[in-house]
Length: 203
Image 1: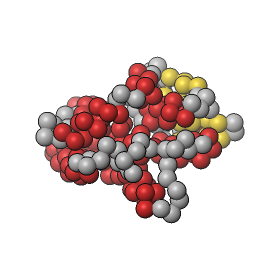
Image 2: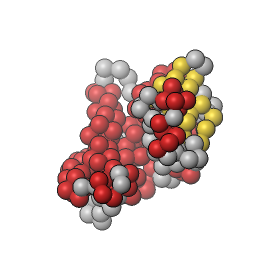
Image 3: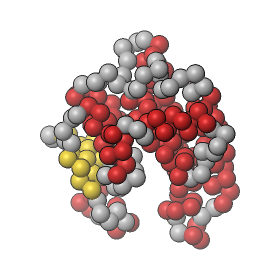
Image 4: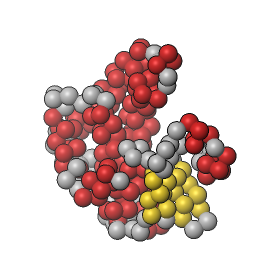
């Protein structure tokens, strides 16, 4: 497997997962991920939207970090990182995986676009504040859930924590996570003790 990677992006999830599974992975770091590169014909053949991550495995090319995580788990062994299909734990596992990306990361993405990505003249402060409030609502849900749980599902580490861990790093980087979110903060600190997460963030 080979993953096209940009430091600090969602490809962190895939690198971390492969570290946990001890699955061989070549990391192809893109040194200059600017607008010109994203729009280039060669890159758009690999990534139609110009984004990362993109995973190549044999003749397969797949993008979207959550889908890549699922693919790697299915093909290279769950390694105890998922739950029995049809079980209550599996339902909660899928909920937290989707929540981490589709619900929680989305307002953080809006904040990113209007504080870092868009040119200053196109940034809208109201979008940033709206994103912050939506992200806070998500963070509070995670914090509440972690009152009596070390991990998101079944009180054991799973790929749902990989999906959520990256999103919480974003929340912390944007200043959304505050002292009052002690459960979420302790949970992120716990995840950060995992060598695979450390390696992925440093990649």
